[in-house]
Length: 106
Image 1 (cartoon, rainbow, N blue to C red):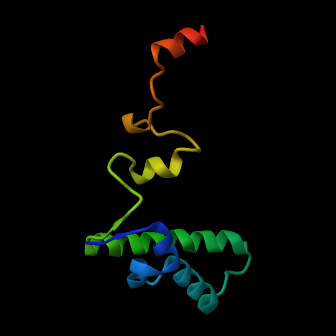
Image 2: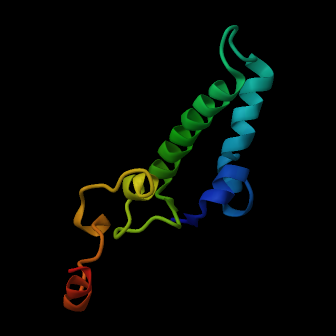
């Protein structure tokens, strides 16, 4: 079981090399299959990035590898949405203000 960083998976370097790299897979598909007519190039590349991220995540799960930046205290859904909208899990809730902070607000 290996712990691989997201950047290594994205670039296909270091321990992420065994999965070939998300970016490599995306651009290989773009260069071999092209971009569908009428589709925005950036949108297509973003869709392929999501597709190949899921494919590599599935391979990692099958081999027992994990992403090193993810922990049980900060699951992936929380990391992905923290700045946009906080999740409802207790681990993502903002810290409870201290008594002094509550008094300062009044």
